[in-house]
Length: 430
Image (tube, rainbow, N blue to C red; front, side):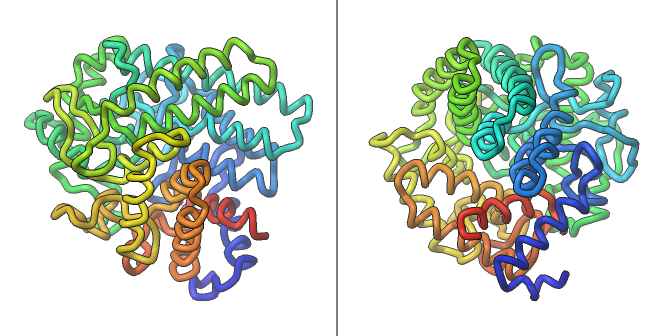
């Protein structure tokens, strides 16, 4: 369908459902053909929200197909390589995790908890689905416990990323300093595949990619032992956005577990969330008026104001002293452009409106901000973001991400989780 014809909610909805079906592989979806030919963790979970609008059972299956490859220690990997495809690098051989069905050896933002609560609350709540829900609740609880066991060895209450890919915001400016300190002199020669599908000006640089692969090779040399990787990694960054998602998912998990009778899990999830929320304010920057990342190697805050520092709006309780400043920052960034919240501070000299996570707008982040703002009694600002997102779709279709100034479609096209977010944004107006 030509993007110029997406002039009504009905046409947007029809196109979004078409894309979800286009990228459906039976039990899992791929983010988009060519660029991302496997199953990605948070993509799949957010995709399930869209699938539930027309096939409830298939939505649960989407997450079940991911959890089926949860590691014994509780980690849910960020990629599952269900089938062979040499169109993506790094593939299974580079990861070398030794799984029966190959997976990567790192994880991604844990949105599963918040998604399964939405699926349950909106769905039929049948006895059959209750059993499926209980299995996913147990899996999510094991995953969340893994984070604090393996990514917070000093028991600070907050977890660290060991690879930029874990953040979901791969080449964010937040990682620049920490990533530059990663040794990459002896990386095995490789050929990228992403720049064969997308203009290189919209993707991470070679400097960044060398260090991404250097970290993978280091972790592979450690045999993917998650009891050792944290201390072995030269990249240890505590991201407020990632931690906010984990806290929010634990809060959702606590409510859902209580609703289905899993009282012990509910209590564990609530305890984790409460403790982490108290620790979150150690990441507050009064100078920037938002939260910022913390570099555990250098033992100092990261001087970078990205969308990650605004995602704590997901978990800030009513009346929290930083709540109004975070909401104000979101509004200020949205004021700068009509097509969604930019992923980085437009006043930063590193801002790039077209390069991956260094400036473009992403509908999945807009969705999370809308959830947080709605919880924080900011319906007008939430509605502004929703409308900005839909304007991007109307103008440019379901792209991976967008120039926040022009809505130019960037990255992959016919993108699955973008389509799912369109369905979410249209839910209350259909």
